[in-house]
Length: 218
Image (tube, rainbow, N blue to C red; front, side, top):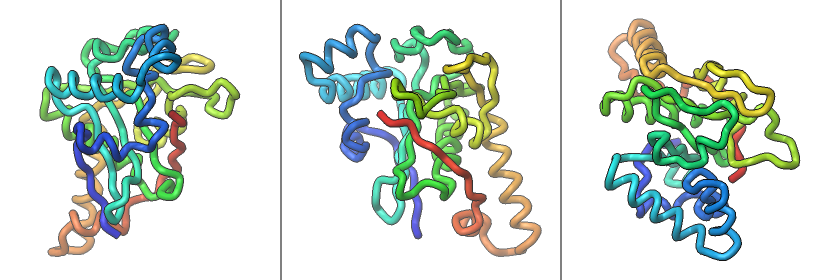
C-alpha cells in the first residue's frame, strides 16, 4: 500500500470530497457564507479563497492519497485569512500560530494513521516557513444535530494537540511544531537502532501506530 502527501492546489482541489469542495464555512464570515450557499456559488468562492491564499501566503493544505485514491486532507492558514475564526468563543488564535481549519479522513481509510501523517506534513511545511505552532478549534460534541464543519476534539488530541483554552463545545487546541516533528524523529531513530541498515523511511509505512481518527463532516 503506497501513501503520499501532496500540496493543495487549484488542480488538486477537485480531489476534495464533494461536500468539502463546496463548503465555505471557514473561508467566509458567517453572513457571507450563508449568502453564498443560498444565492451564490460556494464552490467558486472556495476556489477563489484557495487561489488568493496560495498567491499571498503559500501552501494552505495537504491531501493524502492511498494507492492513488484521495484518502484525506487538511487545510490551514493564518487566522487573518479565516474570517470564521473570530466567531468562536475561544478565539482569538495565538499570534505565533497558524490555524488548522479542516481535517478529514475518508471513512474507508480511517484508523490507519493518516490523520497523524497529514498533521506531520503541515508541521514540516510551517516549520520551514518560520511558524512555531498550529492551533485549531475542536468540536467536543460532534454527534450533536447542529454539528458544524469543525473536526472533533478527539481527532486533535489523538495527533498530539493539547487544549489551551477549554470550552464545553469549542475548545481551542495547540500543537507545538517541534513536538510533531520530534515524534517522527524518535520513531525513526528507534527503528534504525533496532533494524540496523534498513531504511526507516521505508519501514514507517507498515509499522506506523494506528490512531483512531474521527473526521469532521463538511
